[in-house]
Amino acid sequence: MILIIIISVISVKLYLIKKSAREITEEMNYRLENDTNTLIGISSRDKDMLKLADSLNVQLKELRRKRHIYEQGDRELKEAITNISHDIRTPLTAIIGYLDLMENISGNNEILRYTSMIRNRADIMKQLTEELFRYSVITSVNETNPETLCINDVLEETLAGFYGAITKYGIVPEISISEIRTERKLDKSALSRIFSNIISNALKYSDGDFNVKLSDNGLITFSNSAKKLTSIETEKLFDRFYTVENATNSTGLGLSIARLLTKQMNGDISAELDGDKLIIKLYF
Image (cartoon, rainbow, N blue to C red; front, side):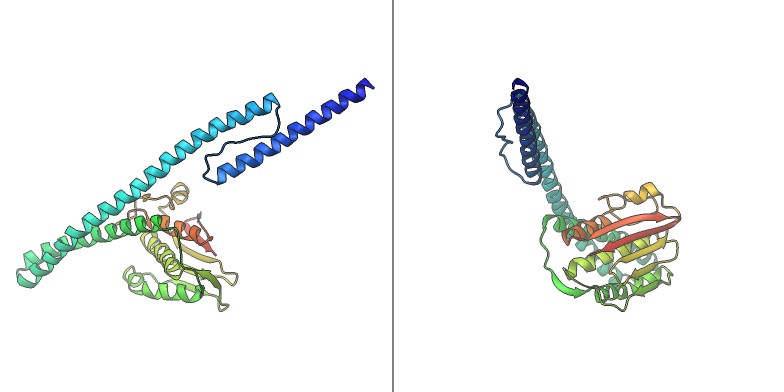
């Protein structure tokens, strides 16, 4: 009889501990997924389980404090980028305007040569500034305007827009777009930006080739030879402000923006190095 009572007490004790463990797990998961100030509470009065809950609450408070510091710093960084890029754009526009006047007025070949060099550098600065500005805007706005569109059409339009740049690099692209229409509910402007940034990246790194393939299942693959690229560098390509040594005129934000927009539209994007081939895969 005594043994039965002991077993019953132990069984009840184990049941209550398991119940408390489930409650703590559910409460912890909820607080990690949601920004809330409420603490973990359990129905059990077991001292050890209460101590565990209190310990987790302490860690949650510290995690929440650090998260708020990070979010505040991230907001300040975005605001600083926006303000700096805006401040730079104004004098750059004035410089380019004065260069136009100098080129129109002066007939001196030597002066024209120097103004051409200055214009080239000013155009590069303007391009980088615009990239910084777009990044700050995109990261500040989390909403998209989805519509049902054909990915095939958007991809073809974007590639056509890069015809001049591809020709300039002396690249003959290999393009394979499925005849099956891949339709998704996406933001057209964001999708065009993703394609543009990936193509721009490919032109910077390419050793002379560029391949694009849209499969029947909707998987989009961009690839090009990049002999100087390493596997470690490939893993960092989506990091903001990261550039590799053979990248020129870049802030390292292009692929970072592409990844951000892809995630906003619940898509997947990845990069891998297969031999000397850089492959970027995109799927929605």
